[in-house]
Amino acid sequence: MSAASPALRRGPGLRVRLTLVATGLVAVVAVVMVWLGWMLVGEVAAGVPQLPPDTPVTVDGVRVPAGELAVALGKSARTEVLRVGSIAFAMVVIAAALVSWVLVRRVLRPLHEVTAAARRLSAESLDARIGLTGPRDEVAELAATFDAMLDRLQAAFDAQRRFVANASHELRTPLAVLRTEVDVTLADPEADVAELRRMAEVIREATRRAEHLVAGLLLLARTEAADAVPTEPVDLAETVPIALDAVRAEARDRGLKIRTDLASAGVAGDAALLGRIAGNLVENGVRHNVDGGWLTLRTGVEDGHAVLAVASSGPVVSPETVAELFEPFRRGAGRTGTGTGLGLSIVRAVAHAHGGRASAEPVEGGGLAVTVALPLDSRPNT
Image 1 (cartoon, helix red, strand yellow):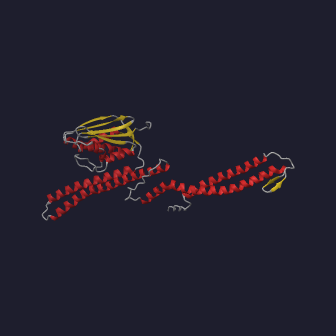
Image 2: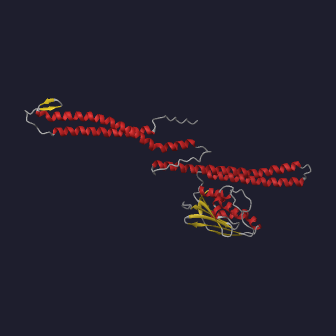
């Protein structure tokens, strides 16, 4: 049973503490100044020239011997310094407290705005921003950083909402097919064995689609949530033949020409996840291709990274929409074939989990080229 976190006790506010600190510093400086004045007048009085002993001398209405003139002047001057200094000390401390109180309030105003903005935030009101204007000081940088954090949070929440909405839509389709087929068949009293077999085939295909979609969602979620991945040695060149074997029949039926240029590209990571990179890219290259098209696969080492590059013919892809293809359930206008729309999203998530990156660019004349760059396995060979 976890221990409850200790409650925070409410102490003096930052404004009060800063005011007290500033006032205390001014008070210390004022005391030092009064002390220095007190010492200085004493030294000045001690330097008064001696008068003849019979010279009449009056200090503050009191007759003093001429030989004690310096002592009397020093005592009188120091008393006056203490009297005036005490009054000045009180006035300076009060003025410092008032000025500090006002200035600290102005300085801390942006912090109060940050606090107020944070209190107003919720999942439905992430559009609130501080928008602090003025000098580019530390407080302004804090406000700008807070606004940037809100931008990232809002983008994350928006992406999450789109993901949930798209996932719900994608899952609703096979479920609707299942229910429709069952309802139609049950409503037909003359349904024969052939009709039942047709219904079973449709249900099997819809179930397969839903299963693939759920498996893709689980893989994407597991990959994005992973703090670390295993670091077993994997050669990207060895993942390509396995991926090709899975789609070779489909590629042959569509008349695709496949070219490979596989050089060793060793990385450290999860073999299953890295295999999904090759598998998804090859599946996309085949299913979103055109009949009689082409597909090229290349692995190797470039710029200190292990690279897997897959390019294929296909529909024309606009350069402005290439980045969107890495978002879940984005298939791109004009792209053919069936799928869950999670292939490139999983590729990007796996690449990021391994410290790499995934990028894409359209192919002139139609098609897409995707490149995955991963850090090389820097461990010594065993």
